Picture 1 (tube, rainbow over the protein chains, first blue to last red):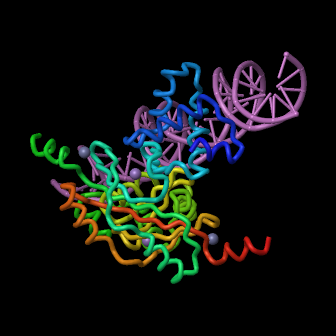
Picture 2 (picture 1 turned 120 degrees about the vertical axis):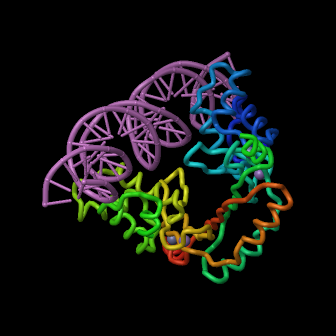
Picture 3 (picture 1 turned 180 degrees about the vertical axis):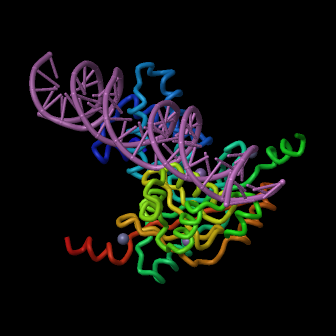
Length: 139
Length: 139
DNA sequence: GTCGTTAAAAATAATCGTTATTTATAAATA
DNA sequence: TATTTATAAATAACGATTATTTTTAACGAC
Ligand SMILES: [Mn+2]
Ligand SMILES: [Mn+2]
Ligand SMILES: [Zn+2]
Ligand SMILES: [Zn+2]
């Protein structure tokens, strides 16, 4: 991942290393704000715009997957930098991987059927997690 | 669709009828701004906020599907008010239905496997349409 | 049809995630 | 170590959406 940056002639800065590390290690799909707050610990003068630019850079070089949510702000996955389905609780907003069968074959089928060059896809399932179901029943 | 509004005790206003008609008839996944511009023809004093509220109302009563795009603004489908996959050209931003196999069975499998109550899903394929592929080659 | 009630529309301000801009800093290379 | 130049910091701007306040009109009762 660091090598990817070097190969593409991007400079290795402490800020970039910090963002990169957080995204690669986190399993919680952090927002830009989340990353910012963590980076701030070690680099108190960090600017939020820097986090935005770094996260977008990592997205553009394919090291991070962006989950676009206009309502609540985007979330990022640095663990599996390729399209894969997610399962989202609409109550507590928890995001997790949902390892249902992959869609690569479906992509290919669609490509040959429509003439589109399919580059990417996104699959989200929305629902209520077991924990939030129990909370609802109690109230 | 009008009856749905009546049954739920929402008032039938000319503005609502206009928005409803546009969304039900359009095949182009209009944005709120698109709807606004069309409604303005017949109702020049219409407020943009009214379109937002009406579109959201229709979404909440399940008569319209929202396609959430934080970058470019949300788009709406009044023709098939249930989750279904779409195919999106990232160059010209065209959106169309992509009738690949449905995901209801996958939803059920996921529900029983995880304990989640799956309520909704979204599947988008992103790519380059044939027309934009040709444009790229010419340049 | 008129009246009264109240939801909805209009007008406008505010919000907030994100991007752009400008200046200062520091990574890379020789 | 000096030079170059990408990047960071600081801050302003943007734009889609939502909230607020005032005005209008849909609906039911009479
Ligand atoms: Mn993931
Ligand atoms: Mn559709
Ligand atoms: Zn939950
Ligand atoms: Zn296209």
